[in-house]
Image (cartoon, rainbow, N blue to C red):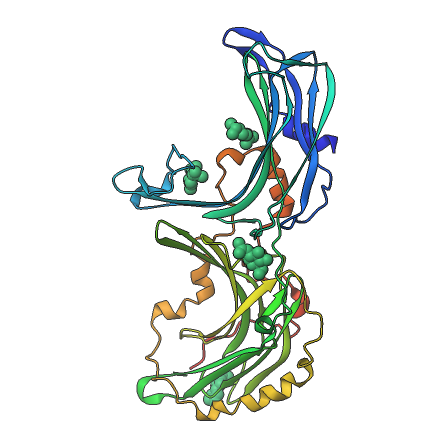
Amino acid sequence: MIAIVDLICKSLTGGDYKGKMVAKVKTLGIVFDDEQRSGYCSGELVSGQVLVELSEDMRVTALRLVARGCARVNWSEGPGTATAPSSAAMATSSPSSSSSSSRSFREEVEYVHSAQTLKEAPGDNSEENFITLHAGKHEFPFSFQLPQGPLVTSFSGKYGCIQYWVNATLERPSAPDQSVSREFPVISHMDVNTPTLLSPVSTNKEKMVGCWFFTSGPIALSARIERKGYCNGEAIPIYAEIENCSSRLIVPKAAIYQTVTCLANGRTKTCRQRVANVRGNHIGSGSMDTWNGKKLKIPPVTASILNCSIITVEYSLAVYAHIPGAKKLKLELPLVIGTIPYNGFGSRTASVSSQFSMDMSWLSLALPEQPEAPPNYADVVSEEEFERHTPSCSQPEDLESELGRPVFAYIQEFRFQPPPLYSEIDPHPTLTEEEQPRVAFVI
Ligand SMILES: *[C@@H]1O[C@H](CO)[C@@H](O)[C@H](O)[C@H]1NC(C)=O
Ligand SMILES: *[C@@H]1O[C@H](CO)[C@@H](O)[C@H](O)[C@H]1NC(C)=O
Ligand SMILES: *[C@@H]1O[C@H](CO)[C@@H](O)[C@H](O)[C@H]1NC(C)=O
Ligand SMILES: *[C@@H]1O[C@H](CO)[C@@H](O)[C@H](O)[C@H]1NC(C)=O
């Protein structure tokens, strides 16, 4: 614990103030009583201590604590946006022009704001009123209750974040205030055991590939998952059928996508990235591949955030067929990542696969889509290739404002690990039991 405090306080120095030598605060830090907590829920008590260490006696006017929590969105658009706007006032919620060509979009929604005084000199707040804190270590316990009302899970993204933090400020006569702040994680639980999230999701699609007159036949894809809601760490069993009646060798794959949508001043900014994927066998001539519960593991990602008015985090499961020389055929199933796992009382699980086979009858009924023209170069560049050249959103975001302290970085580091970057190397190699080499272009 002490190591953390040292880290927090490293930047604190006393010294000169308006020409006067003022005493130094050796340490100013915040520790929570439960440092291991993965998240506080609405209505819960957050408690801890403000630690003050002084190398000499010091006059203090007050020690105040503020707890805050808010969702904030911030991005810029326009030609000048490569360089970030230098002055940024958090309070603004209307678009402001940092230059004639670039516009900033900002919005903030507050969920928590409570202030308390941990120590205060009696009387008014004038320079003559102070208490003396002696040299050495002092601990000031604090606690506050999170609002009963709905809170939104902590989240940190490229264009927006949802953060909760406490800020302790030491006020002294004839010296600048000194403050420290620390974030604490909040979880808004989402139970996947609700009728909507327990219901299965399925969809299907087919497409023609080939040259105009030499259309070889459709590629048909159908996919289904047993339920809409899953939790971190669970593996989603995917039921799918992929039929190749075309002249090309196709490779079926599945991936989980995370879509973060930020809203400010009537505009939205969306960031989409793949957080997990799995690959099937290549499917040759006239054959069909069936996934009878092929598993795709959910990596440690933020649970879905669906009810914050300015930031949403949504997930989907894409099942797609990579077709050499053509655009991939892709299905997308909505997915909700919750925090309270399935309790097993659904009882439909057993019948899912048989039920699913019956659903496949649509395959023969569905009208094929218009035949697709021969591929052009852009189509041949695979979407993976394309995605690799598209800016990724998985960097820990820059939205720092008053929070940008080492303390903060420290917490972020283990609490909010960004989802893994996409790579051709499967991050969960145990799941790809039938890994095949990349397939050549065949017409
Ligand atoms: C908004 O984002 C820019 C860069 O993206 C950053 O420089 C600026 O400080 C941010 N403003 C606020 C208020 O967070
Ligand atoms: C959001 O939804 C979750 C789960 O349904 C709920 O617990 C939480 O209170 C909601 N928050 C808001 C801001 O509506
Ligand atoms: C804490 O709050 C004070 C007063 O609002 C502010 O000036 C200061 O920058 C904050 N400190 C930190 C470390 O966020
Ligand atoms: C499916 O792909 C293979 C590539 O190995 C191709 O040769 C075959 O003709 C395709 N299937 C059908 C029914 O055409």
